[in-house]
Length: 139
Image 1 (cartoon, rainbow, N blue to C red):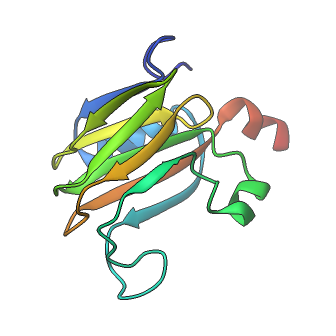
Image 2: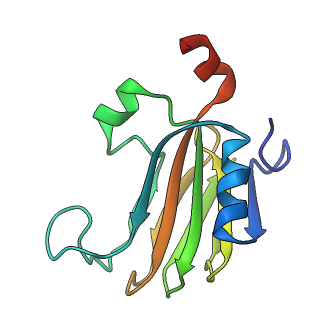
């Protein structure tokens, strides 16, 4: 299943959390679901209003990435904020300030993503998916 179009391997959705999760399941097997925000006072998940450089999910989670292939990433906005999510594809950068009820799904192998701006109280539901074709080979 292709995400977005061949020239834009991501899609922006205005939806409910339930429909967002159902859409994510169409791409394959969920391997991790987490809330992304500023919950802790220290460590990687802490409130850090600093830019997050362009990367692929799994770059900072080597142990998780070595066990599974993070093929598709979904970010659904539970609480909006000032931070922007940036998508980089073929040297073109697109910026989204996700609002409550918006989600973005992208091909983690095709695009890079980043964050800029203050995280503040923004909360995202993040879902990592391994493509179904690969998941079926392991079953």
